[in-house]
Length: 283
Image (cartoon, rainbow, N blue to C red; front, side):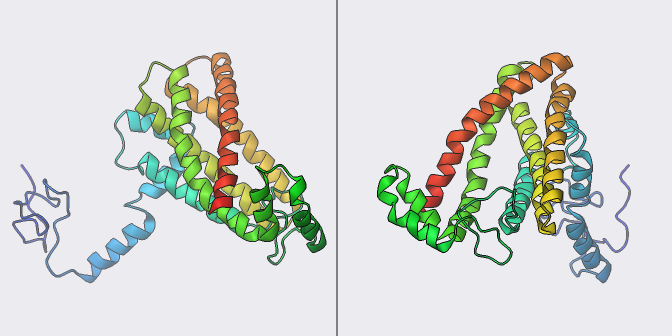
């Protein structure tokens, strides 16, 4: 027997779709039974749910993400309500990473995209005279590389910004490729499972790399290098562990498969990286 609606939910039909109510949530559209005139408690409660992340799903997802394979296992076993969908999670953390990476200062020893960074605190790679000399010697550079080198030399900061605008789309397009490689080596689950697994693994990678990029704000080469190394080591352990949790198998076989998958993925990443540079040049 369904419990009656608590006061002040006195409406007998859903205000959203008009279906008769038999509880605190509409059985047709899922909307909570609400009075036509919102209360202060309701408005504050809705605001808190949004800020705290979809009724706690953001917090639950990020608590589970560091545990290799858990989110994928929960998803394929049907326990999905309390977690963010895989693609939404991937998009959220990838945006977070690219925002941090684009804003992070280019310290010595870090990854440098562009010949120089004219922003305050940037690490200069080429002087103005060297850039001018490079522009004068464009004819000596292979023709296929000239537009890219010219774009980097003339507007290095703009070129770097365009790279970070292009990278998310290219990386997102590589998700199915990684999933296909996993599905090829693990036939005991279907391709959609591999796609969910790929989204979760890439999401964790973006979290790790975000930490590494954020370390550059310390302006310390040592801190950035150490945290970057730790992130790489943790992620190297994370992937095979997640494969064991989701797909099973021995550690020796898993490490072998992870190595092969990683090598193939690296080969695919090379033309993808050149595609990013080409798109950043043409935009």
